[in-house]
Amino acid sequence: MGMDFKKIDNFHIDVLREIGNIGSGNAATALAKMLNRKVDMKVPEVKILEFKDVSEILGGAENQVVGLLLGINGDINGDIMFLLGVKDAKILVNMLFGRSKDDRSNLAFDEMEVSALKEVGNILAGSYISALSTLTSLKLKPTVPELAIDMAGAILSVPAIEFGKVGDTVLFIETEFIEGEDRVSGNFFLIPDIESYDILMNALGVNS
Amino acid sequence: MNNLIKVGMADLQVMSHPGVLTTLGLGSCVGVALYDPYTKIIGLAHIMLPSSENSRNNKNKAKFADTGISEVIKKMMEIGASKNAMEAKLAGGAQMFSFSSMSEIMRIGERNIIAARGKLSEMGIRIVSEDVGGNFGRTIELHSDSGKLLVKTIGHGKKEI
Image 1 (cartoon, helix red, strand yellow):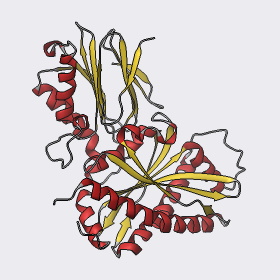
Image 2 (cartoon, rainbow over the protein chains, first blue to last red):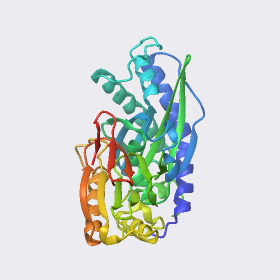
Image 3 (cartoon, rainbow over the protein chains, first blue to last red):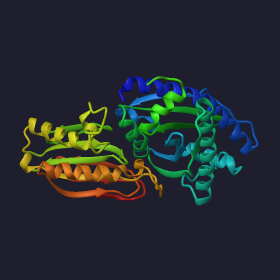
Image 4 (cartoon, chains in turn purple, brown):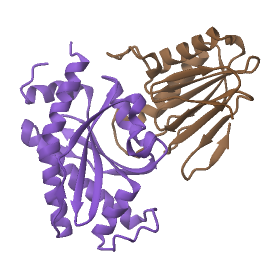
């Protein structure tokens, strides 16, 4: 397989841009249904970072963040990850439980809040996966999400290591959801297995 | 205040006494800390993957346990350290998400630790302490005065190894 890394990166950017637009739209609609309120989104942005700069996102490597990781199984295999700041996750949880938005006194998450976040993870994952499915006609299914709350650098090491197998950059989509005065920004990572890049490229009509 | 140098992901740095090398938010990556007690020269590598051999992109030596460890030793020797005197400490290699199932993505921390131990032993360098595994992130600081490695976590305490 003589793929070159620039080509993989460029390809990955195009895929992310497409599923970012469609997937974030789907996700905003799904969130609106769940909250029974109007949810808008900002146009998602594709971000590319060198490993050395990875820790700069989300306020630094030691900043506490919430990561949701799901596996993808089907015609391609891999993982997807959502990353939210702790404050953003708290706003999201407060929205879901209909609490006042000022109720941010406690930045820890109880069991109910963790399962609510996982449910949101499911919904967001479903939105992005169906966008990817629509674009590629591949059959894809997400696994049950796992959640981790820890230092940004530590959680980011998970996608970074996978990207490290093919290149020296981390690619992701930054999206912002807006509900009333609340803004929740999240980062979405698509992490295909190395073997899945070829299938993805073929499905999208790109010759590798 | 001592000199403080940050070591990024897939990066390595060495320095002479007095100074501190730090890497923030280690997850499944492994921090390999090396210390020469005679010259007090220190080196730190932030390793992402076990081996450069199976990689199609192995230009960055610091990314892999095998090439990263050789490289940090070489750079320490260039500024006066002696390989025979060097001692190593390891930290990191966590499994950040607790998937019960499958994929290789989950066991990479453990594989990084094994690869780092293997390479150090091959180079004849003794590992004097470790704080590895678990499911949490670590920030580490390597101090040139004593070779102590400070390990900080969120919710799992702070220790010196």
